[in-house]
Length: 380
Image 1 (cartoon, rainbow, N blue to C red):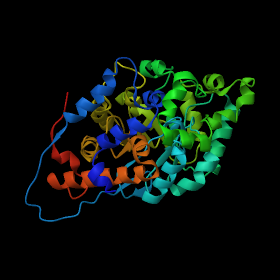
Image 2: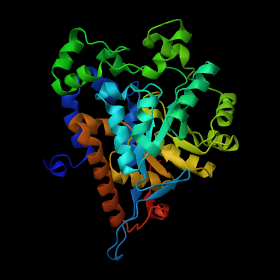
Image 3: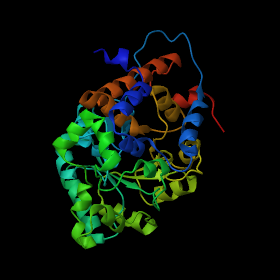
Image 4: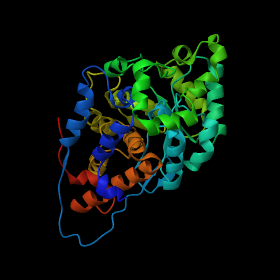
């Protein structure tokens, strides 16, 4: 099958994935919070960022490589951490880790993944980033860091934009529980997606396995109850300082939209700022991530990572032109898995790289370092 003929864009992967992923899982993957206005704004505001075309540059091959946090990457994008990836598509964490290792791009493993760092680390090799939802217990915190470090993860991501649990209404209506249970209508939905169901039968029902390792600290509560107890999801500045001292590798703070926060994080010794509104999944009254990017860029000299709303190489160019040093995608990799299984992530990377190169050619950008000169209009 000619994948580029049948799936030339992320939208094609998304349509195919929706048919192959059970509805209750799809609602977990694809939903945001509230009326999903912020999720929509993430997309519409990206469309308002326009770039100037440029002519008579002759033939050239665009250089899409970047240097970030002391490492060279062949492409300016990577794989964001996504909780419960293995529920969205069976074996997702391991497949994405292998893809990242093969392509030489970062892969972020979530604290609430369905696989342990110990099992994913050897597969991702030098490309492993570990995302932490901050544990409240200092001993668990230390053990979690040691576990990630000993598994080969070299970069730590602290997620700070989940101070309280959001109300994801579509997800609630979908009926997903933690841990997931295939009963009643959910079992019927699963039966309508035989490839997904067969994969789940082979891997077992997904659980937050790292959290289960610390169940004793929460009086043997099941994972759906002890996760909220173990994870202190609203850290403070002292917590950030403690982590900076405890982690000797690159340290990224994810969920920054306020320039003043970016300034202080730089003073605290953080290595990179990640601009995101959690893809609209936490607060439905937020500015879009792309609207926040220029202000954060102006406030700090640190590398800036960006996500939210990315649907192709042109969007990556837009974010880089507005000051991002690197772009991460989350949902899109899972659309690719849902549509094409193990072949999906590499095909998605190829889509993004080809689209990025084509658009760099249109604006006469031979490399990524001077994209700000190509800006024409930005949304307000």
